Length: 383
Image 1 (cartoon, helix red, strand yellow):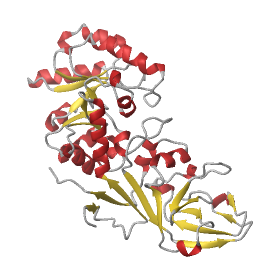
Image 2 (cartoon, helix red, strand yellow):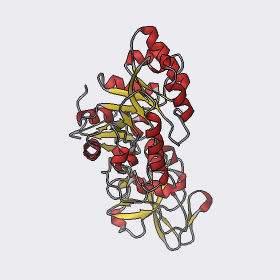
Image 3 (tube, helix red, strand yellow):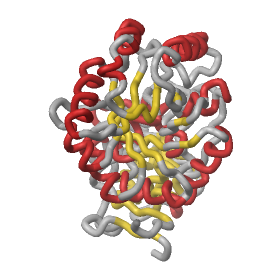
Image 4 (cartoon, helix red, strand yellow):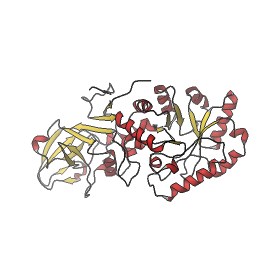
């Protein structure tokens, strides 16, 4: 397929479905966010294997589009990004793993220091090797996960022997309610962040994830760190999605079978045919990240797929390896063994699938499975 490549061990002809990642759309989303947040720097959160779409291809495409700073969660993720991008700036959000400071130095990584213990260990290591290595310091402004509390900040401000042992490359925090632009907690977190960071050495500041980036300049500071928006997910859960879709998932029909009125389909006999029906079987199931909770009875917003130019609802529970789809209202000659099926794409977004499953697009993307052939459109050249 011209302009695309796929993982060699799982080709589209062998896999039950093909996951296509549109790197052009990814780059367009980055460019849109970069223009929106200027003059702040637009970095990229690529943790969780770039939200499940593949870290190596993602960071190469983003770097080609001008991204120079990347955020991962864990040290192992950082190693993969560093291998792809020898000269990029890489922050490790989960901080400094105890006793592994030499590994950060060797790979030129910047830990996001989220406790006084981490700050002290990094500072002592820097003094020991005679080099002020860069790091970020994380202030907890209200989400109550990682980060320095207000008393921690005061303690650090009073201990220059620890505070001044390394390079302060970034001071950051994280919004708890960024997907709700009008939430009062957003403003409260900004106020607390501003109050605490002035007690520390001067450094660029960062607070905004995807939702925060869209919430306006008050959240941009010197750097934004979008994640889900880059990959086509909607950063705000109550407004139209401004981002381009990046991921599509396509499969094909294994079989079409007739079910008489009154017949049931799937485990638990959870779906009953109210009329003579035709059911298409598609080889994607909950092992592949198509959640069992996606099928819901008695709803006016049923989950489904797009097939032969029409929407077709699920008929019966999602099983490990397949879903069953009601294609009764589609002309019989249009749906047969081998007919293509869109599970995610231009007609069904990742946000639709998340809504049906009662979850968020983050979880849908990161769960998409290992049995898919993965195809990347317009992959950039290796660094």
